Length: 102
Ligand SMILES: [Zn+2]
Image (cartoon, rainbow, N blue to C red; front, side, top):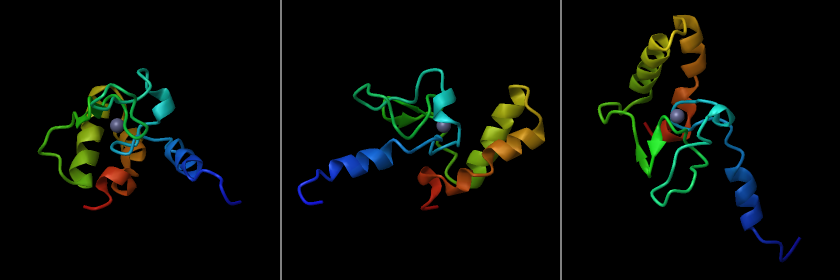
């Protein structure tokens, strides 16, 4: 179909993120609706635990998906989840967009 704005296709792609592209958390479960960009708008990619005002909240020492996964497992364990649940919830981290180039 000629003349149809291509932006709509991008928008469809953009809203298809179901999980935070940093930690894998389901975005619809995010109590704050997602992280925030530098201009204060809600991020379509990252959750409020990972991303605030355009910056990642995770420590800068976390520079690989393996470190991120270990970090999230620790966080979940200290929040009372057992290790297996934590592992299941974080095992997709290496495939998320933030980590794909590592
Ligand atoms: Zn996240």
